[in-house]
Image (cartoon, rainbow, N blue to C red; front, top):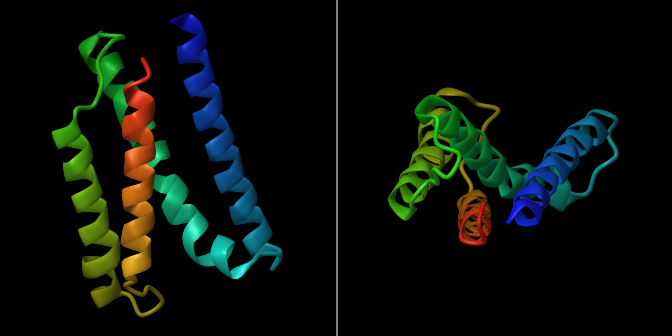
Length: 119
């Protein structure tokens, strides 16, 4: 079981490195339309849920604590509403995009599946 746990940490670490690399490349103006518009949204949910789960494990002192389906669904809804409906109303440089919500959903499903592998 330890190998699965280590692999999940490595996978999320790689996702975070991809996120940081994408950020750096965007600021160097080296990016594709997909990486500029959707890659961050695809990576956001697994990274957010991973960090939340690690904090919850630390707070509850329970290394086996996992975010359940309801928590994941509520997190997905909260991020979707906040970043695709609420914030674009108040900040002109932000735009609402249904494809971003689709990317959040894919990221949530990805994290859900990793949770079920013994994370």
